[in-house]
Image (cartoon, rainbow, N blue to C red; front, side):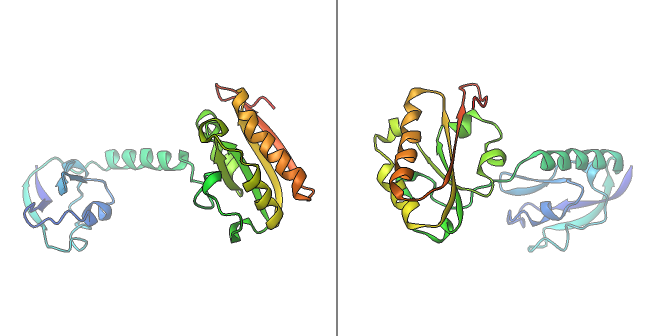
Length: 209
């Protein structure tokens, strides 16, 4: 059918992507740094993308094109909404996260709940952010690979700040015992009475205790 549809002049296109963001139907993609009308049947011909383009690369034309398929557009929007709903946000509260790089005193420690985690646990346990990191200051390390004892850093963090609680999450493998032992020794020598929970994760991602 002959209908009004957008036309993109690639020579004028700066590759900013503003038109793709403005196209509520998802008809435009950015390909090799240029905007392209990839799904003609998604373009409704209303031109929401025109005012978004800073270089005037988009105009209207009338030509042979597939009819606007509202049902296909709505189905694609539904898929995109479902994907967005299923994705979990990052729960990271600070940077850096490696124990050996963390400062011993920082505002983020004020009334903080600490999560001291063996770094493999985030890969083994799928819902790590939501179940463990949420509302906690994350501190990760591997005593085997780092070849250090985290005791001194941890005892100073606990002693110098208003820490509310500590959660240790480690793998079931023996080498992870080093991170648990470092936390327990640091807590014992800090002179503070804090809640300390230890969570053990199996190599297939199950919580053992």
